[in-house]
Amino acid sequence: MRHSSMTLPRAGNHPVVALIDDDSQTRLSFAMAFPELTVCGAWNEVEGFLRSRPPADLVILDLRLAPASRHLELQGPRAVAALVNVGYRVCVYTDGDRLLVLAQCFGAGAIGLVRKSDAIEGNRLAFELAASGQEVMPAGMAELANLLQRRRSYPELTQRQTEVLTARARGESFPSIAARLFITVPVARDHLAAAMRRVAIFLRQVELEPDASPADVERALGLAPGDLNEPMVS
Image (tube, rainbow, N blue to C red; front, side):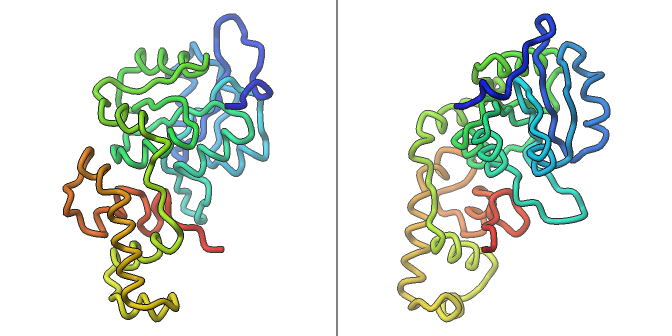
């Protein structure tokens, strides 16, 4: 993980952190809640932060960013990957509970997961550990730890599998999907079956039953309209 070019000499033992969160109250109160951290700035979106690229030991990232003004491409796992790729350590800051999405954030390079609702002192320590390069996660997240051990085999879906899965989740018929995507109905069915097989083991291990519907899978993977992993339109 590349991060050395983005770190600052610390003032004493205080790690330098940057906050990205669309909630204005969180941005205003974060430095007061964590005086042991040196907050170099607070942004409401990743795109704006990347234009500034301030040196920091750690970027603390809200999992879901949703300013009302426009659709954002960089949130969730995509945001983590974009920040890691330019050299930042990233700690996800959320109360979200979809383990598949959280596991994908770690797969994209996140170094930590801190829950907003947990005690401030525990969160402060977690941020300090993450800033120093140690992976952190809340107590009781054994399922996520198990997923992380297998994150290299995370069930990535092909573009076509994703298209068929999301279409079925929204109630579109196989004949309609096949006509729109210029494929046959059996091929469309095969794409859905392949997608469901790829995530089946994860569904059994986390929050869904093995016979989950396409809509259940879509939500677990963050693929629903406006969700964290919604496919970007090229």
